[in-house]
Every structure is written in C-alpha cells, then in structure tokens.
Length: 227
Image (cartoon, rainbow, N blue to C red; front, side):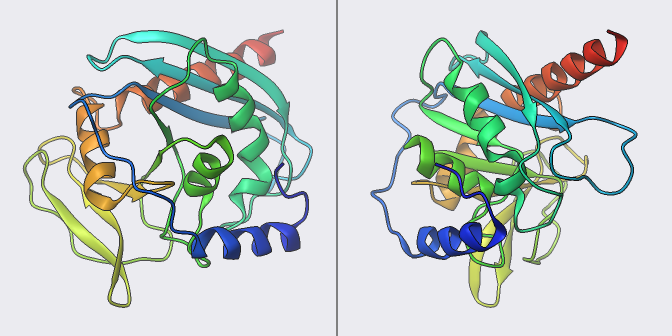
C-alpha cells in the first residue's frame, strides 16, 4: 500500500533507496511500454491541495509503438503538491490506471524522478517497486541533480549528478529541441532507461506512451469540466 502521511512516505523512500533489486535488461529493442500521467482540477488556487479531483491515464504500446490499450481512472489527490513527496499525491491514481490496462507491460514510464531525489527514491522508482515492474522516469528538468546540456543531435545525452554520483541523464530526443531528463527507476540503470525512452519516441519530444497518457488524462478532465 502507498504511504498515507509525509512521515510514512519519507521512511518508505529511505528504505527503497537502500534496496538493490536484480537489474532488468532489454530483451527486445522496443519493449512493451506503459506510459502513465495524472492531472488535477484546474482553477482551485495554489500549487495543489489534498483531496482535489484527479484523472489518471495509462496507455500501453507495442514494441513498434502501436497502441494496445488505454485506461483512465478518476480519484482524488492524496496530498498537496510538494516536491519530493509526489508519491503521496499521485501514486495511488497512477497505480490504479496501470492496473486497469488490458495486459501487463514489460516496463512502466512515468512523469516523475527516480534516483534524482532528496532521498534517492522518487515516484518513478516507487511506482515500479510497488507494481513489481521495471520503471523509468521522464521529466522536463532535474529535481536536485545538475549537469551540462547534451549535444544538439537526437540521441545525444549528458550526465546529471548529485556530487559524484550520476543519477539521471539529459537526453535530446529531437534535434535541437529542449532535452528531457531520463531517470532510472525500479530495476533499471541509466543505459537501459535511456534506451527505453529513445525506442518509445517518435517525432515528438516526449516519448509516445507518456505523451498519449498525458493527452488522455487531460481529455478526461476536459470532458468532466464540460459535464
């Protein structure tokens, strides 16, 4: 079960960060990937509060990046928006959406961090551990790590570090477009996480499973607003 208080989550993150599960390796160049994304009600004021309505979507895509199934669930935020404590707010909704998919993915992709986190265990890692599935995080910018920009060509990357430890990578998914940040999560290392993201990316800057999940969640929110 997901922690229900900040204190419980902080303890769980510390425990997860110390675990060393067996590594997962790509058996196919393009694995079966599920992207997941959650959005919350607009116009409520502030940065986000506990209990506000939320819509989570998950999209399952085949190795050749064709949609295999999708699911949307509704619920409420488990906590306010607080960097480093995102699992409290979003975790249960994302889990519910992923479990509603018609088949189990080989790897899960979330809009969240992994080792680039104050306690070394962001939501992308936590979600994979709870589902017992390899996981990868994708964000627009690092949470606490830092590093240089990658080269301008598609596929070029640069290390993002906390001290001497490489915890994420800045990855250029489109030539000269702003890079994304790739986070290793549960049972994935940096090379595997980057390979999964590159394989799941088409012409858009964002990997296709995550892009489609984001769109599905926002469309569900818009439909609820119209209703």
